[in-house]
Image (cartoon, rainbow, N blue to C red; front, side):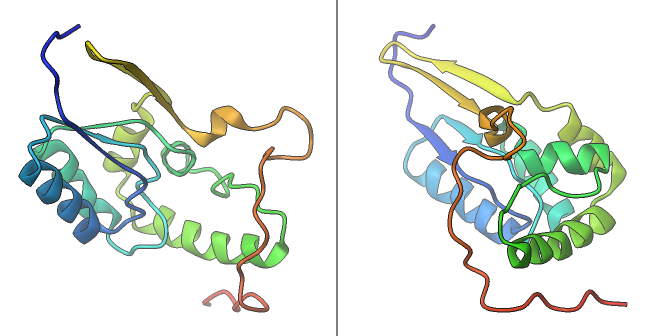
Length: 160
């Protein structure tokens, strides 16, 4: 454990958006962050998932696997997000299917090697980061904490 304070930068899921991830890295470095962490959920929503990999590895960003990363690495049939509203599930399935189809299996295998929990200790504190999947209820109800649907209407038809 270091006795010198280290400024750290932590980002939530980049969700397939390499431009946002690079902006995080640039901003964190400009602010003097010595260590960078990503809380997972690399895929989903953004169209350029594979473009994240060189940013993560080239900038020594330490990652924890999010539920999306675990699902993509195993080629699960869905992201495992557990939305209650069927419209949310339909939208989630569209983005998951796109991510699964457009993420290289090599990057997916790298995601599969990420731990689902990491601890960081400094002289001032200890932090634990973990995937939301760890906080899932063991009951058949899925997630313990659910947000109301934000879906704007009926789900779109799947592309054919």
